[in-house]
Amino acid sequence: VAQGLTQETRDRVLKAATELHYKANYFARMLNNKRSHMVGILSPDLGEGYDAAILNGIERLLLERDYLYFVSSHHWNRDLIRQRLEVFAERGAEGVILINTPAVTAPSLPLVSIGSLEYDFPLTQITLDNAHGIRLALEHLYALGHRRIAFLKGHTQSSDAESRWAACVEAAQGLRLRIYKENVVQLKRIDDGLNPIREGYVAGKRLLKASQKFTALLAFNDLSAIGTIHAFRDAGKRVPEDISVVGFDDVQAATIVQPVLTTVRQPLIQMGMLAASELLASIEGSKSEPHQILIKPELVIRQSTAACPQS
Image (cartoon, rainbow, N blue to C red; front, top):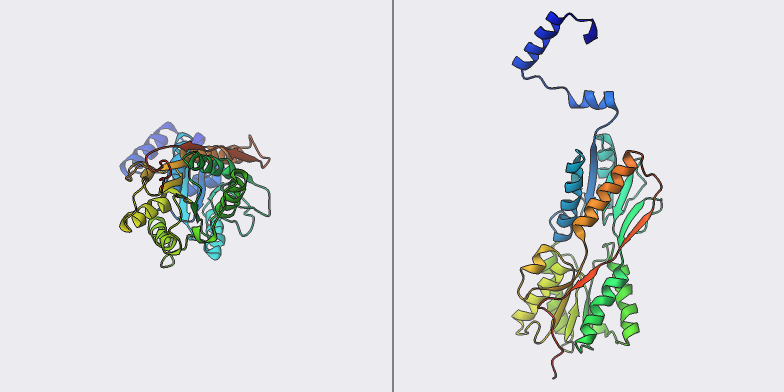
């Protein structure tokens, strides 16, 4: 249409647009181009260190590629998960990244997941080699002389809880370490919310009440490990002189707690960037076949572990 206008008319239109601060309507432009350059991100809890680090990586890649994103949490509410996926599609998202999130139904959008959950439909999945990470942690404690090791299991809803616990059992068998029932505690949600440090504190208290016969603890994640350190300290136990503690994830808080936490490091930022890259490849047509990417963690030895006390 603009091609049929005289130069004078074009100049008048541009002048008026400038004076009125006119901007092109985003949704009209989206309909015209059939592209929104927006993706959805769904996570159990946006306040935890693990999710925040992954979101950091996702955001870095999306900013580089000039994409916007919606972010929402669901606190393991399956109805909310279904609703959020529908809303993402209605709002024009071109794809979705799931962080430790089950998909109740397969959305009609490209999908990438981060975590160890199993799905009833094919999708690209970025998972961590939990068996390798747990084995590194237990071998480290074993080399320090620890034979009575306690464990914090993840929440029943957590995508990594079962695979990580199965890895604990397998690694312990390989080292001929006995797992004592009283030395295993599962994390539980407090006040129907996610508060991992507080949950770790409560679990640490439960461990000490059930058993005094352990010299090391392998926690499900860093924040619960930090909670147990506070619980042990309040009970008069020293870390690592009396009890060594190993976390999992290597979130930022692991480097500022005292003592600085020995942990199994996941490359969380890189995993977020990889998930975003895989999703955009699917959206833009350069990669469409679902596949699995297995990430190898590494052990970071710091100050929260030491040789088993002789007594």
